[in-house]
Image: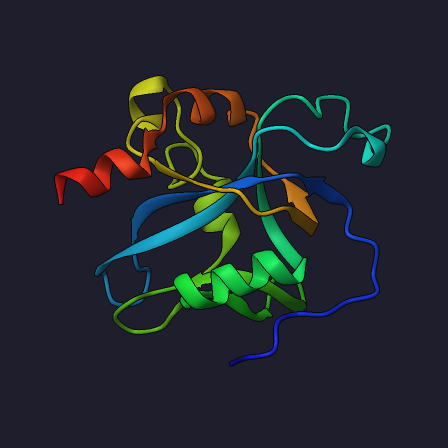
Amino acid sequence: MQLCEQTSVTLRYTSTQFSILHSITDCWRCGNTSLVIALLAAVLDREYEDAYDQNSEQPSVFANVELLNPEAACILRTEYPRYRPDYSQAQRQRVYMNHCSECGAKLGDFYLHNEPNAAFWPLDAVSAAELVMRRITTPLALLGDRTSANGRMIFDNATDYNEVRKTL
């Protein structure tokens, strides 16, 4: 059994539960399609709000995740091994990031979150419905960035993971 991430750092965002968003993207290196994930919290705990976080009751998608609570880190390490900490040249630090399922290339968060119509930046309800959302009943605490102004649209329109599994 692998030891899960331990930290004494105060993790900025907390929620009693979270969701894992599934999407696909083409790898910049090999061109193959790869599963990518992002973390979403439907509601953030109010006690951790500050002047920059006025919308804690709006669903939030996260990127540039530096640290996670041990329970969430264990779930991701076990079930999504291609989403793991790695060194980001752009940020000059280790952050959680997706990796291509074929060639292992780093698929950085800017590429997935900050381009219109990217994996986690849907422009409308139809493209948000292409995301698959898996609800996790484990608490989430992280140090990272809230990224999506479309959190509500994603939360309201993403396809439920359990419905997808029934069709397989």
